[in-house]
Image 1 (cartoon, helix red, strand yellow):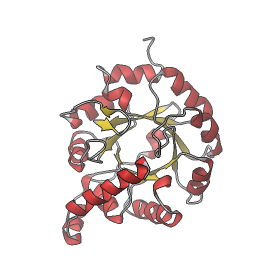
Image 2 (cartoon, helix red, strand yellow; image 1 turned 180 degrees about the horizontal axis):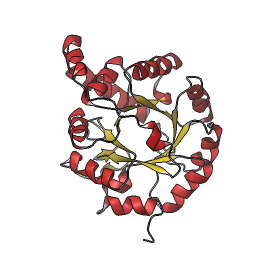
Image 3 (cartoon, helix red, strand yellow; image 1 turned 45 degrees about the vertical axis):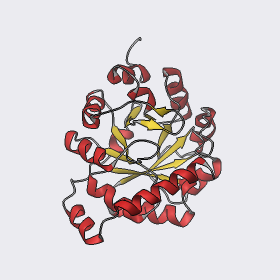
Image 4 (cartoon, rainbow, N blue to C red; image 1 turned 90 degrees about the vertical axis):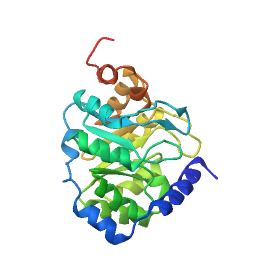
Length: 259
């Protein structure tokens, strides 16, 4: 079993334990905050950043305690993040939907629910919790699921970050005509990082689509590599949560300082 398969197995088990009756979920959905459009901020003239609230990871273990995800999210917003990503997977990343709810109450910029979305219920609960963007991992879904879940998220008003790792996955992603495609430099089956993926894969994505470079970014030169390949945005978690001053770290990554 690959790392990805193991994570998804745990996600399904946790979902089964928290699943609410549909009527109750629909009631929550009817009271959800209005969707905030993430597309304009990610398609700006300058490099945009999706700043992530992330306590741990399968590859590195514990990263930061983050007792107040809403305070960290506010610091990201104040530093100019276009979107705040909130990990909600519990077993490997130490997240929870409650983190997303807390962040939604604290900031007004778009929020990405970062999780392994493998069931229709997750999209309803994401929107009910206040998510504006959801993640679809091509490697975790069949072609039919990818299309169906993309359509469902769109019907709910949310933007979708479609995550790819290979040439074939980009082809599969393009088939559903998404507005945002991410290239993840981390192999989700082995957890190895290959930053050359940015140079190899991002140029395959049409410039009319928002292109996001994900994982492994910790230095300004890596941002420049992604930008040269055509990325409009970067998604960064570990580097920011481990930084004593996340605003300074964002400035450094985006070339705003001489640090």
